[in-house]
Image 1 (cartoon, rainbow, N blue to C red):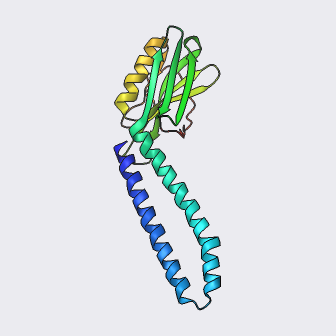
Image 2 (cartoon, rainbow, N blue to C red; image 1 turned 30 degrees about the vertical axis):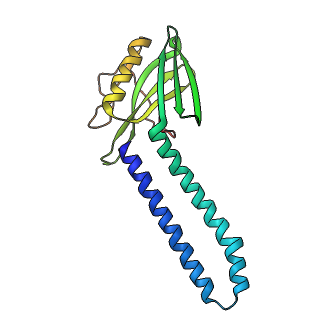
Length: 189
């Protein structure tokens, strides 16, 4: 997560510099032209709305990532017959999901990044029930997902399917054959 925060801050800074450079370039080119009315109207009705839209989108995206880094919280509540996990980012979002203990078939560790030689590998947890799959954790260290996967599997009394840390493939010991689908987890929880 530290690398994500550093990357977000650097991207935001580079984007601000880029927008400033483009704005000064266009302003200076408009001043050099002879028809000031067309230059000013083009600048006011084309350039400013276009740049502000993309600038605002980039800034809001980076602010969301930074807020997630500092305020993001994922909590698990193990009850007798259900698992309740809550995803919070301060006061912005609050997602609560409940998984019945009797419906859990297995808990699986999945690789969420670090494919094809990427050094920054990360793992996640997938809980398979009779009806759907829950991505309860993503972009975390191998040890965190392994520990939480074992805790959830022991609580639910189901099989835990770990991955090999080096290769990211399922060990031969597991009794289940899982379809080899790449799970793309959109949210960073």
